[in-house]
Length: 227
Image (cartoon, rainbow, N blue to C red; front, side, top):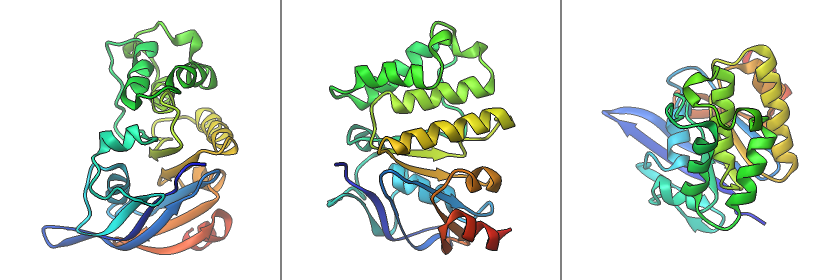
């Protein structure tokens, strides 16, 4: 049983601009939770608060019963959370295998060896394992980054614009893969502005506008209102 990541009444302002205004949401296991909305709505700020790269002005971030509001990002990784980045964060000079190994090392813990091997297989990267990342297509780089996030055997995965730069076939493969992870009991949060991807992917969608969640519910119902 893994603890549930949640934000409780989180607010954050920069230079008088309210980026997050009383935001509450949870990321339950075995489900894909999506956050959508226009640029500047606060999606990325919320993502950073959950990941530990930003600290809210008020409100709390919890992992199960534990208050992790002040816990830095690297410590959250060790407690079973993993994330990907909007700007690809893959080491170009390292091979795919070495990149994935970095993810296992960052997470520490006993489960990472098996998780590392499973991540390579799951993402069909075994044939690319020895190739330097610099040689890869965007789709393969995204898969490498996802494999690195999965290599630590996380219980909760935070994905920032995971379909960016992917073609339709790669995006469809990504959806299949993410559904398989939640079927396995993982908790996923996806921040995405591709509504078509979210429609076929998410169980629950939260729509953000101007730092607030303005609608929440099942993907089909909520996205109908937004379109």
